[in-house]
Length: 91
Image (tube, rainbow, N blue to C red; front, top):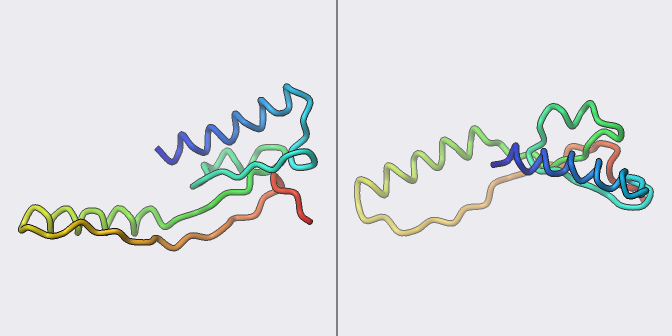
């Protein structure tokens, strides 16, 4: 699913270009859990990164806890970082 979001950001940049808009001069675009392709775009895609391996490990732990007993629902926050590119206008 995260790869789809990144591909959507790539598609958004293309669609904006096709409509005569410039990224980032006219509009900023940020991907989410960017795919490697984002590094080769012009402009290079700015993206939010999460530790997907950590998320997968934690999801597995929670699933096993739920299977083993009557554990309550869990809501957790996952740390993230912003990988700067060139698709966001700097003020």
